[in-house]
Image 1 (cartoon, rainbow, N blue to C red):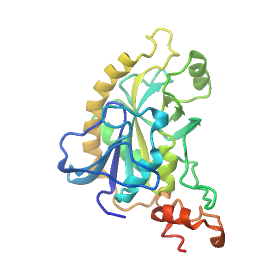
Image 2: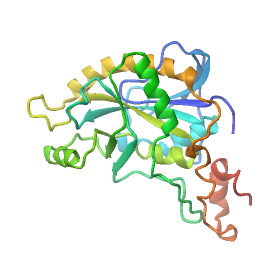
Image 3: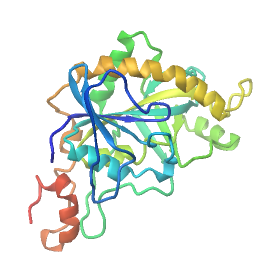
Image 4: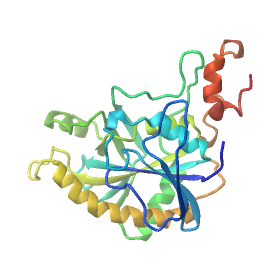
Length: 289
């Protein structure tokens, strides 16, 4: 592992760079899973060493199901990242969660279909706990910082992640509301699962752009509406990132930090050696061959 930054920021739709970073340099990180979405920007923001990665690539050329999340998370882990702030544009499924609000979810529901969601494969099996998919301590710090800035923020709620790139049908939106979900997006998974497997704290900052398609009196979601609201949200989230960074704990006592401690169940003599070398960055502190 090359220690470069303990804090990672994954930019979503509309957030492709962060002004104010000092000592900036870009690095390409090789991973066993291919190339990350883009070069990773390293620098200091508010006197905190950070690594910034736009998940859709600069210029937004990667569709949600085409994001190489395994490479992205592995690359950040390789740079020493221990906590990730993940920015995500999303639609609201609740009346009280308005466009241009921020929601910090505490639960996830997976409706994706096509995305590799684990570093583990046949030959090396691991089962992480994922009852609490977001780091609660990291989420709390983000929420407190947003409140200190008087931003319209909500703490808690379920993020339902769909495959995309299409938006929902009215039937899908209605069912998601009946099930009690709060926001809908396309990017939190498999990022959150992979971050947990990599023992990285992960929290989503949901930037609400629209009411999906369920609210009859509202204009249905279009890319123009999304982009207009996203532009307003991006300025808020840039302020939020700068405010929360200095408050983050450097010592972690959460479940994320030791997620793999009892997760690996394959007997040593059955472990595929090639796969072990591939995942040594993640599991090497628990297993040696």
